[in-house]
Image 1 (tube, rainbow, N blue to C red):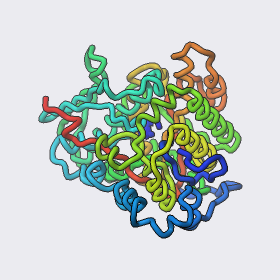
Image 2 (spheres, one colour):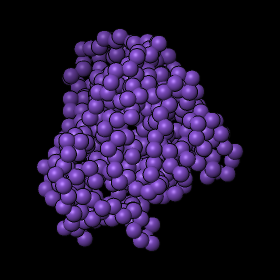
Image 3 (cartoon, helix red, strand yellow):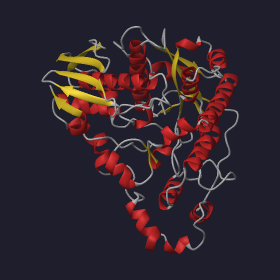
Image 4 (tube, helix red, strand yellow):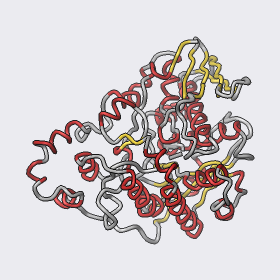
Length: 439
């Protein structure tokens, strides 16, 4: 999930010579014990405001006009001064103030999901929630086999289950409860026990969890810290999923190279590139209107670069693809201290996908509570599914299986993890009134 949100979840504007921090025009794709530092770290680029503006083509004159005239107007109207603020973002800070079942649904809306398409509808009763798929919100080319979308539903289920426990309730989850393929799950809410400290910590993390696409520090996440991310994760569903951590240098390097190649393959596949680009919201007006999709704020850029990117006019899909590829190569894979592969008995099984989604959401919340960053990275499995849909040779499956050490049909989705160099920004979310109806 490229949020997700594989994903959940889960551009280049100045040419091939730019650094990984160059501001995008379109898209890209939310404390454990200390480990030993990595042997090497990627170079750090130190930029001042003048070099930022020159690097993005505004030149020295922009130093005079930023804050006034046309540049100042675009800065004001395109969210330079209010990143992550306003009604599209209110739910992140206000979800816990929602009373009754509405607060639990609000937690579900904040779950990771592929490209932040928010593919759900919630039917709310006095003591129940039914989760349905919204057929208008899907990515049939990028997510050819639908796994990321189903994982996103699992993420929403886990958020709601955690929010319920924090409110002293138990959410009894029945996945795929009837013959209606669009009816994803039924949650029956019943009085439970007093919430534990862990319940409260995970619930608190719901509003703080964001996909972090920025650079991660060289400090590694220890094996002990990784193991705590999957502890205390009861009732995720059957069959029970688990996570395979890729921490050794050789396999991380091999997996990183595969991510870069798969990103290039997606870029070269015009329908995949076009579908992904359609969910990018470059302007603040787009964010306010749609309240979904990927944004400049979510690309993990340094503040100065982000501001410069927002001042510039929106550019092309091809420039966005170039930035995504560069970020995958020079930031995402270069700074990942570990990768996680969600393992299930059968990636084609819908219930396995839901259970895997619940686990990856649980890991993300537990990581957030410990100050650890995470990003869904699913380019490889997206290409595996795309090759299968086109009935062409599987370019990535055999190598993917060899590197991760498990059969190809057991590797559901994947992520990178590490300690962040800077905080991630929230993604926009639709209003509860847009995604709920009364039973």
